[in-house]
Length: 328
Image (cartoon, rainbow, N blue to C red; front, side, top):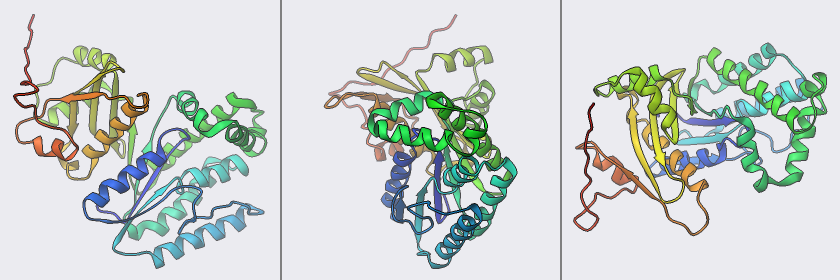
């Protein structure tokens, strides 16, 4: 990715912080100077505490902070931010001040215009199953966090006007925020990728054809997608750019069965992102001090890519990889 600014976005529990840290780590491996900032830290483009008395005061201060960042940044570095482009503006405009879609979009568009010289890229981690995503982080973040976010979302602004309350009300707020955020992304002249789990049969077929593979019938593809243990698709401005599909027993073994990055997106870290993102998911399902084996079959000449990700070619000791095709 030829950019000086990558911003990771998504709802709570989607894995923004983990993904931002992973992107920063991979860029450092490529010899880049990387400055990564998580939410809640002292930040070159954002405020740690949002105690502004009204929106206009907040807007002026936030936009000024973005302008200062663009002016004073290290021009040789790649900055990796978390949640400052969509989440924070949406939490304030929508959840706190109960502004409509158009006002939120106009404010975010102002930020987009300021950061344009950095060729920014937004990576949106899209988890449509919001309840599952939030449920998974509850143990880590605790009841104090949950009570605080429920109160923030339901006791003021959008949540209060719509009579929302409790955990379910909080989730309803997040669902509407997600819808607006994705709509705003589509409306802006900015490069963005989404990482999701909802690959369609037509996207699967397009990626197969782009790789030069013989495409199975659509009915067989639909069955394969449904039967996959885990699937991820990366889209660039709505168009499928890469996919990875897994079979796993959640105990001892996972097998990478389909992995394609469209040719025009190769060399932009998408393949690495998908592999590392998948590994983070697999690791999150493991118990402490356990090991899991990940298997794959590399195309001839592509072994080097997988070696960089830590995979080893099978030897005489481990036995040869073998296959058999059945036909009816």
